[in-house]
Image 1 (tube, rainbow, N blue to C red):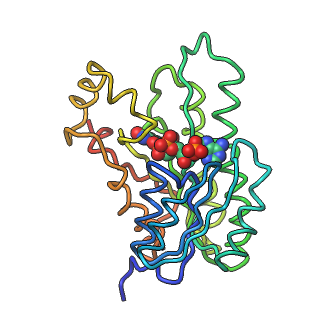
Image 2: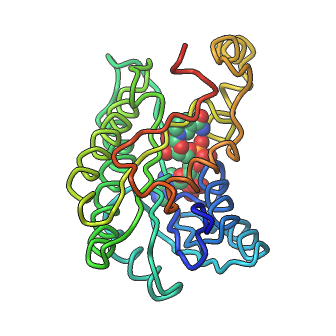
Length: 250
Ligand code: NDP
């Protein structure tokens, strides 16, 4: 038996239309999972690519800047794909400003999307998983789950919070068959980081600091997601797996 096989499983991936979310959706589909691509923008390309891999896919429209849609995301996934085995909390935003000038709006926007919605969507999916006695939650954390960063106070707070919640939920749910873990990506080349990549000075500083000597590609995270979604990780609880080219090791 292949312990990484996801055949017959349904994975919900938030923010799956682009970047890391899209890559994770495709990696999970490549391992056999059907995929509910959740987001506020249509995910036609992701849905088409998952189907091209021979898996079922559905788009579930939801703006996760509020928790209003979380119950519907679970219900629509069950209606459209019949199961919900894996939840990948990937959707996220960042706002940059000095801490001394940081606004309440930039605080709320980031914390509501990156932390509050992550908790309440996990609660909604978790109720379903706990009732069945199995399930996997994968939170997308950050290097700023471990480090302070600079000029991103609400992002750092949200991603630290995601790390804490990963452990709390793992503690509460491990004995009931639901594993909660996280992936902490390093510097990954997506739209989110396009400005950093384009800035020659900052790009060089980043590359000099990464032991692997390159930016991560979203597909670099696929193996970690398949592992944490699969039976191979059944005894892994509350772990935050850095996929960062060695950034944290430095
Ligand atoms: P992108 O900006 O490329 O993608 C973000 C995704 O989140 C998009 O699909 C976006 O949808 C979605 N999203 C944002 N806000 C909402 C919302 N209110 N409701 C629903 N969906 C929403 O970012 P990345 O792929 O780079 O990042 C994905 C995750 O990885 C984030 O949580 C990020 O913090 C984390 N991360 C990224 C790193 C990197 O270096 N790239 C490093 C560490 C962590 P839409 O297109 O509609 O805006």
